[in-house]
Structure formats: structure tokens, C-alpha cells
Length: 146
Picture 1 (cartoon, one colour):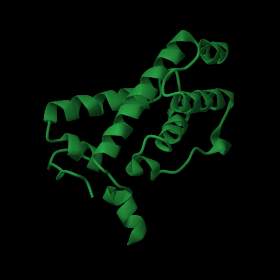
Picture 2 (tube, rainbow, N blue to C red; picture 1 turned 180 degrees about the vertical axis):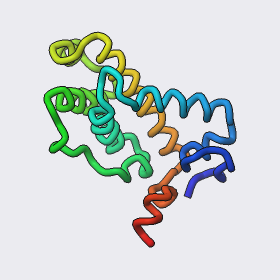
Picture 3 (tube, rainbow, N blue to C red; picture 1 turned 135 degrees about the vertical axis):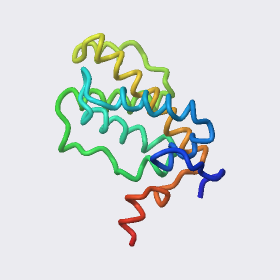
Picture 4 (spheres, helix red, strand yellow; picture 1 turned 180 degrees about the horizontal axis):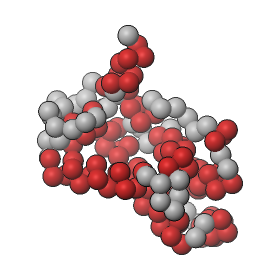
């Protein structure tokens, strides 16, 4: 159970918690749509990174979609997920030798997009963890248990 009541604004339980601040909720959702979609990196790659981050960022709601699925990994996804794991383990203090590995597989545009996605996703997951957002709060999760 979340630590505050959900607002009536928002399409998801996460948005409803942000919905107490409608302007922030709208901007947050819009940025999420941009960062999560297909750009220079695919949404499939980003979903595997999101799942990787979710395992360590403390948000049970975020973990509910499962762990990363190696069957969906290509070379870029493997490198991105590996970077996310290092980022988590080193608390963001990533050595340049690891960043150099990224430069072998990704363009500057892709690295910028990946880092923005990792930071935004980590913030979302920390918010969910702070709010005690749980999988049972998810409409699709409720359907699974009915």
C-alpha cells in the first residue's frame, strides 16, 4: 500500500501518485514517453535496461514486469544492460574504462540517450520505492490474481 492516497489524476498508479502535482505529472509523463520510445535506441533495448535497473532500485511495482530477458539481447542490448549493472553496482561512479566500452558500440547520440534514460528511469524507480508502490497497485497485476 502506498504511503499517500492516489489522486484522481493519471492513467497509471505511478501517475496518480504524481497527480497531486498535475503540472509535474504531465511533464514527467511527456518526458517518459519521449525517453522510452524508439529513437536512436530501440524501446526493446530500453525495456531490458529498465528491467535491469528495477532489480536494484527498490520499487516492487517496477520489478513486476520481470527480470531482463537475455533471449531479446543483441550486442547493443548486452552492452547497455552491462553498463546499467555497473552503474548500479558502482552507485553511478562509472570509471572511464567502462564508458570507453560504450564508445565502441554506441554513437554520442546513443550514449546521451542511454544515460538520460538510465537517469530518468532510476528517478522513477526511486519515486516508486519511496511511495511504496506495489505490483498489486497495477491494473494488469490485479487481473492476473483474479
